[in-house]
Image (tube, rainbow, N blue to C red):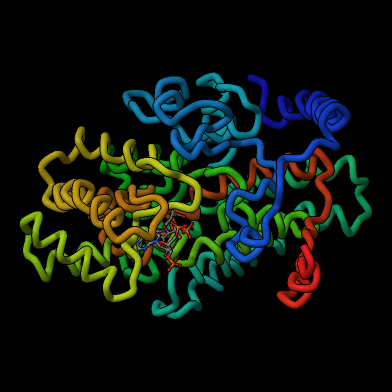
Length: 435
Ligand code: CMX
């Protein structure tokens, strides 16, 4: 079958023409006003970035290349006997906008398996990290160190022409994604002490190998969960902290390892990816305080205590979304199918019925509904992956798919260095003094 790189080589000249035509026709048109509040307010709603893999609608949630999560579940290739989409197919979709064949997905699984080995010095770096260093810090260090092997950094030193950037960036992105399971598996086993890493099985798919490296290869339902998990966590348009950071750093022509290492440092923040760890900690504290089957009143009181303590309710709210996150819904449906009677799942469902009311009554959060992080930990816990400090690493493995797809396109389209304008408060005051 045609490889992803071959297909990409056909698509790039067409997309360059497409962008030229868009800019010729619309280049001088304005999206609208930029207000002073947006500059102080974390740039909410400011149109500022090009991102092709996915677009987020505030009401409906994410679409990957125009397809909703249920559409991806229906249309993307699956493992034999499986019912969740293979992330390999999602990556093909993010990069090309097209649904691949089973054979193309299989070839991608094999290619990633063949690229999966880590340089020895990266293994040693991970092994030297103290188990008390947060898994996300270890993850970021290891990914950054892969820059030693970057095809793009090497080609740049050798004077590669601008129009050819995308080739070695593509190679680096394929290596990046391929090597993440070995990094994640090694960190998990080092930190939580669960024995020696097995070898990658080149006949199996990416999610199986990741599950197996973590010690869960014999649990088919967990492998299915990872397929869904990676798919839904892969991409959430361009403005979120991890995606935007990767794009920004990549715009300096830092190679994909450096760019994605930076993404991971942003994902490690509690308002972003670390929220999945925070949700589980919060749930466990709630359980230990209120018992296994608390009343609605007790749960309501616990949520109020969180807010009154000046803390956020983790897993709720969103900077863009204004409805229940479809990534939450996809995980809820997985739980209804595979673990309907689990007590922690029931608690998550109970909170879903109560937290939005409380957040609305408190009156601050613009979105009282759950996001992706409100549900992921309970699924991982059910299958025995109970170490919540590791959860954001799995988010990071997934997020590489979306960031990598855009890094390839940015270099193919010759995206320039990012350099928005900043102002001091003094300058803002002066600028609007008599207006
Ligand atoms: N609990 C308590 N207060 C919340 C809240 C929540 N879940 N969500 C928003 N608020 C508060 C904000 O802290 C803010 O308070 P201040 O005015 O005192 O600063 C106010 O409501 C308005 O915020 P907003 O415009 O609704 O939300 P933002 O766009 O500023 O922030 C987010 C979005 C996600 C950081 C926020 O909703 C939050 O902190 N949620 C909890 C953490 C979380 O789940 N993060 C994961 C998001 C998904 C991901 O990236 O993985």
